[in-house]
Image 1 (cartoon, helix red, strand yellow):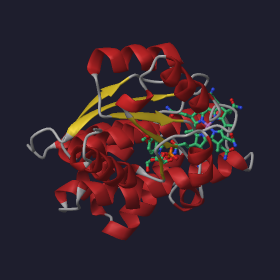
Image 2 (cartoon, helix red, strand yellow):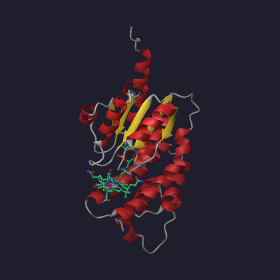
Image 3 (tube, protein in one colour):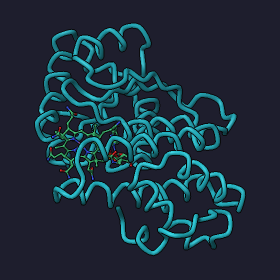
Image 4 (cartoon, protein in one colour):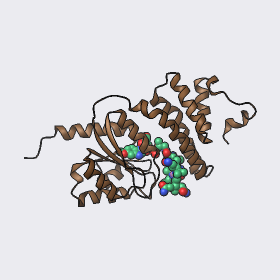
Length: 239
Ligand code: B1M
């Protein structure tokens, strides 16, 4: 139970009657408590109040998830509760997905992305996909727990400009290096731009595993993809 719940125990809360600030706080509490319907309702109300979808995502949902993450780390929340919170977050993201993706722009490029083997965290990856699609990229989602072989076959099949990998665990991030080594063995490394992301990573790690770049968040993933594709296209071809 989160702080606001005690005060609100007697009367049901009508989300639409709250002002924006109260509603965002309440959505944080509802996300914390894994109340999917309420989080989706709050998301729809903010959109009806002309909030930009990206602002709903960052100010209401990601901020709520940050608090869930802190309490998970501190042993206040446990896996089942975090799973409920994650499901509520994903349901709200499903509402935002078409809005973030609706640009009608011609394809900017193609990306294949997956969460690496051993890792089942997929919220950050889904966010990257939404933002990439919103920027006009075609994205092939390989899902979670993705072994190197699946990355390789997807590259052979879809011929993407970008290979994206996500890892949220310090124990799974080294697997990104395994994928890159496999790309080299298969002589595919030079065919794709490799971008990596996930909370425990940093630029040094990306350099050490010979990825092309580390992306701190979904917006950086979009910018980096655009810059690197444009650089590749403008680069003089080898004599
Ligand atoms: Co997990 N978990 N979890 N978990 N979980 C973390 C990651 C943890 C930091 C929590 C903590 O202790 N504070 C911790 C890892 C510690 C560590 O390794 N140092 C942890 C742990 C320990 C575990 C388990 C081992 C717990 C257990 O079983 N005892 C277990 C592992 C399971 C496994 O993967 N094998 C586990 C399980 C779970 C749940 C299933 C309950 C659930 C996942 C549900 C799901 O994803 N469908 C879960 C969750 C929700 C979290 C936290 C709370 C939230 C993660 C999240 O969704 N963040 C997380 C704590 C935290 O990160 N604060 C935690 C929101 C998301 C928008 O951010 O994913 O960082 P993020 O993505 C960002 C950027 O990183 C970047 O852009 C995104 C958007 O801006 N980005 C990319 C991410 N991927 C990218 C790829 C790119 C580019 C950018 O490619 C180009």
